[in-house]
Image (cartoon, rainbow, N blue to C red; front, side, top):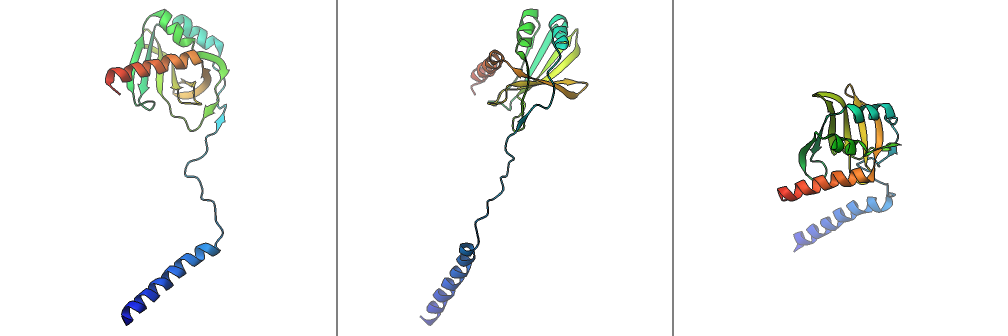
Amino acid sequence: MKYLLILVTLSLSLFACQSEPTAKQPKVATPQTTAPATTQQLYPSIPAAIVQNLFQECDFLDVIFNGSFKGVSMSLSQDQQNDIRQTLSFITTTPAQINSSCKTTGRMFFLKQGATLLEADFYLQDGCQYFVFFEKGKATYANAMSQVGANYLNQMIEKAGQVRGQ
């Protein structure tokens, strides 16, 4: 009984010692583990002459969805000029506001007779509907994506997900 009383007293003392400092210390905000999302215009709008050149010259378009959006990895190709031009119409003249928290949904390759004319990453998450264009492997231009374009690409992902049972 004597040992039990000593054990209880020691336990209470330890508990009191542990809880007391936290009561006296002011609460400090813990830093966020992820940085808040920021949007900024990092790149100029793609020149109209480049888009016009793609409109005239591009004869094949490869679109690769990387699976980061809705979990669907797939690719689609367009070889009909009207389809390619429709996809090009998704590029607005508005420079994109790049959201630092968004991940790329996929990449487009604009080709002429098998040679790459231009590459573009595209983004489809909420708050992220835009293209980032690459020249010689370096991000160079960025433009907002039209809502029609975002709807079209989302429909492609939804259809592929349904076919695969996702």
